[in-house]
Length: 186
Image (cartoon, rainbow, N blue to C red; front, side):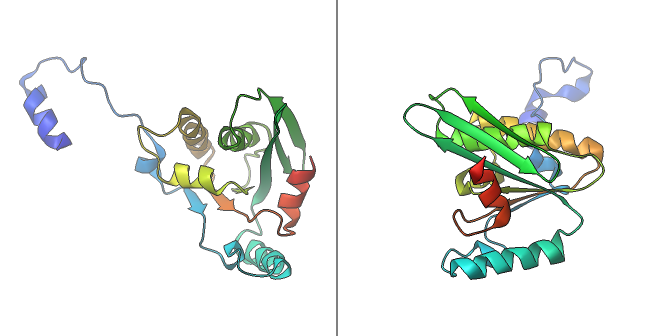
């Protein structure tokens, strides 16, 4: 359908193409440098007992991501405030954001902020979040996706310039996963 649209525009006759708006370079067209893991790993099965989830997580990190820089993010919301947090082995952050933000927006902003503040350029990145919905939205990125998801996709795309592989993984909340627990405590 898009091909027919461009044929209808007849841009080959030497006429100017200044009036054509190109679709932005997104994660969809360049997905060889990032992965989103929502249910790929055994630790992501909430039916398992908590102690097993913890052990399975540690096994996956040891086998699959031992040379990655690990970052965990979290967000919280109450009736009076909304906060975002992130932690790595090197540093951490905690910020309050306007309480009008939803928990979905806060979780996405936490990942955005973590990419800005906690990334390193010499290692691949493993970003852990307990926000299934944010990762699902990122995985299904479309023009009509929320603006915060487009912002997150843009930040991930920028990391490609550092020749980094980025893995985003969902971690079940309250499952004794060390990284998630540390982010929860911030």
